[in-house]
Image 1 (tube, rainbow, N blue to C red):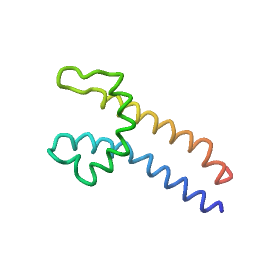
Image 2 (cartoon, rainbow, N blue to C red):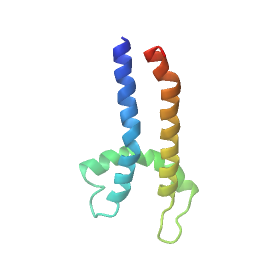
Image 3 (tube, rainbow, N blue to C red):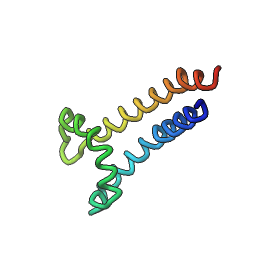
Image 4 (tube, rainbow, N blue to C red):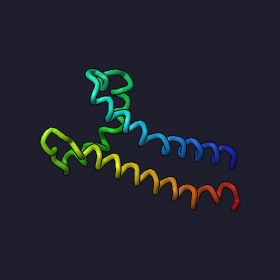
Length: 98
């Protein structure tokens, strides 16, 4: 059972590590016509649009620039770092008996 939990934690940490990168890829897709309408674009949109929407409601665009995505990316990166640190500080020692 402990081996299974270690694998689950490893998968969660892997996902947390690469979610900000996927968010950045989603932002870059807006620069290419039709990229967000692809299967990958729609999949990433289902993941990241619920995260971006509150930021878009709070932060208005400045001219033609939408800085809400940048603020959301920084906040998301910070949240993922905090979550990773919490997992390493509290969960990993429980699993490994440290």
